Length: 421
Image (cartoon, rainbow, N blue to C red; front, side, top):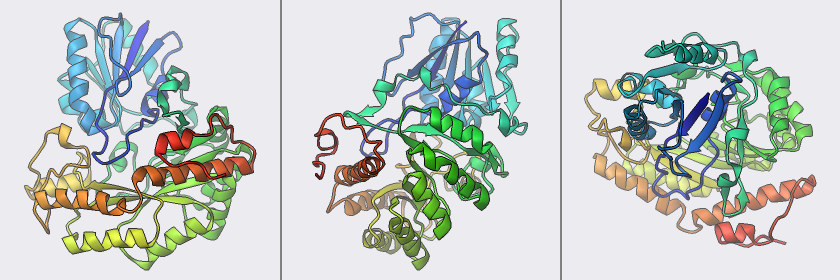
């Protein structure tokens, strides 16, 4: 059976340097498919879809709300040709009802152990409109290595610079953050993979640089320490979402190859300042994830926050505005207060204001988002800061003899700044 798996295109943040990481959802999904299914993967962000190329069955994997309308268009085109379409992925779960109008089937939940049933139904002409396993999650022990061989790896280099491969060591999140839908998608229970299985997958990835895409590694201290201990011999360099910032955990993370972390910076407190310093003291860089537009945010607060980010010397910062994605606490609150003025999912890119803020107009919040990007990167451009981040990882790789130079001027070519000798 020829199964075409498509990842619809989506827009990058307006002021963000554009590069493309290999998507994680499709390769994890592909690993759950029956062995007799031949998979052709198309990442529309990097290549065109050939709608005339034969396919028996089409799957559309959507991660972001800003992909859904394009995903629907793709599905409509194939269905007009008589080719059945199934949707899956985070955004399909968040927009299930609308998506079902453009689908022969919508899969909700985690795919492990479920695809044999789905494909048997397809072969027998009895596809169900919805396969709902959102609250019937497979045992975490059944999660195997992703099928990265379906990716065209050469497409995910940024001007010759090797980017990262994505992997996960856990699912679920015990937190329930205001703007986040993870508690709906993956449940409030932290579900770590067996460490030996996670390590086996990391070791099997030929890329020396990884992105651990777990929602947060800081959910079980002993598991976190055990994971980092087992990662040390791999000599990988990796980035992730927050880890605990205690000395013991940070020391193990550094030994395990921690390159940088994504850390939410939500105020100008000493707590945040000290946390960033502890990361830096252990040689771990920090990319701040800065969410603007909460009900407490005034113009003066945003300006003070940007000054604070420069003061604490964040290595990078990514600025977004609060976006009320379906099935989040933010969505429920703002909808109940009749403050959301756009339900056009193309606007849900996290850099467009789609609701009325409490402390300023929507237009002013949009302007303050641009102010944040422009002010933070005024003295050093985003490309220069990214260059420094890549220089850091290459120094780490040289220290443990895993750096493989290709061309001396790669970083200069990519980011406009030469390597230090």
